[in-house]
Image (tube, rainbow, N blue to C red; front, side):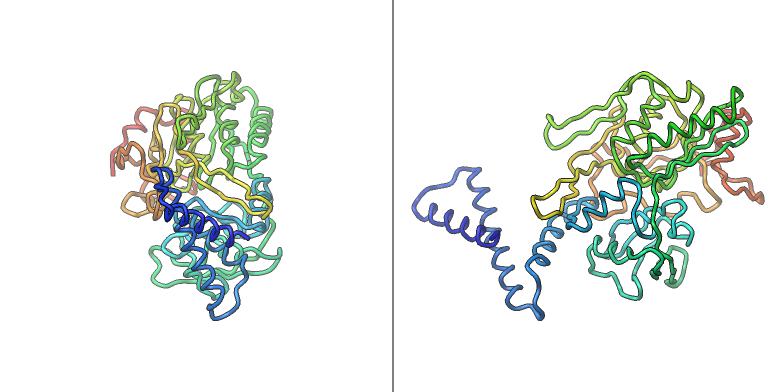
Length: 431
C-alpha cells in the first residue's frame, strides 16, 4: 500500500504542474520529495522483480529505512520489531548476548567498551578492537543491527569473533559463551577509609543502585569516611534521565545539563534539587576514552560545579541525544539523534570529550602517542559546535619499574587521603 501511495502522490503533483499551477518554495520542496519517492518506488519494483532471488517486501523496506537513518550519523538507526524489543529489555537492565558496546566503522564492528563482568570483558576484548567476522562469516557490508543480532543467541551457546587489534600483526579469534547480561551494574566496596563505587552503565536501576551503595558504605566505614571514588571508566552511557538523577545525587542546586535541538523551542534544562547523598564529602570521578554519553553528562556536571575532581584520560566525546520514536503498528522504532547536550557552563563535549582535571594514565601505554577510540574517529560524526581542539595534557604515569594494578584508582585514593597534594597533581610534567 505504501508503494502505491508514493505513485499516486507523484501523479497528482505531475498533473498539477502540467495544468499550469506553479508551486511555491515550499511546494517546490514537496515536489522534489515526491519525485524522489517516485524514484524509490521504481527501484523497489525493479529489485522486487529482477533480483537473483525472491526478497520479502518487508526486507526491502526495512533495509531502505535502515540505510536512510544510518547515513545521518553514527548513532541514528532503525530497529525492527525484534531489535526494538531487545533494546527495551536492555534498558531495563537484562538481556542476552556477550556484553559489549559497539558501533560501525569502515564496514567493521568497533568495540567502544566491554561491560563489566560479561563474557566480552572476561575474554579480554578492549575498546578500539575491531570485529571483522562472526563465526567465520565476514561482517563486511552487514548492517550494524544484523551484526549485533548474530552475536546474540541462546544462553550457553558459543560465538567466535575474529578480532583486529592495534599492535597485533594478525587477526585472532576469540570464542565466548553467550550469557544473560545483567546491567544493573552499580557495584561498590570499601577501600579502607574511602568508598569505591563502580557504575558501568546507565539503565533504569542505576540511580537506585548508587543510593544503595552510598548508604552501605556510610554504614560500613562510619564517621572516618574520607570520600568517594566514582568509577565511570568504560561506561558507554545509557538513559539521560538516569544521568540527571545521578548528578543530582551529589548537587544541591544549579543546572545539570541542557539539551538543544533543531528548534529553539526544543531546548530543555535539567536542574538539581537540594540534597547531597555524600554529605559534601570529597568525590573523585574516574574517566577514560571509554567514558561516553550519560557518563560524560555526570562528569561534566560535577566538574563544572566543582563538586568533584575528574581524574583519568579524556573521555569519548559523545555529546548527542538519541530519542526512541516508535513507528506505527510495525513494532519497530527509530533511534534518532534529536539534540546535543551541553554542560552547565554551556560547553558541548561533542567530538571533544571531557578533559580531566588531573590526567593520570592507566598504564605505561596510556599516553597520547597511542591512538584510542573517540567520537571524532567515527565517520559521519557531528562536528563540535564550538571546537576548542585537543588540549595538551599534563599526564601522570606509573613510576618506572613499579607494578600497580590500577594506577588511576591508586592515585585517586592517595589524593583523598592527603598523600598527594591536589595542586601538585594538576601541575605534573607534560608528555
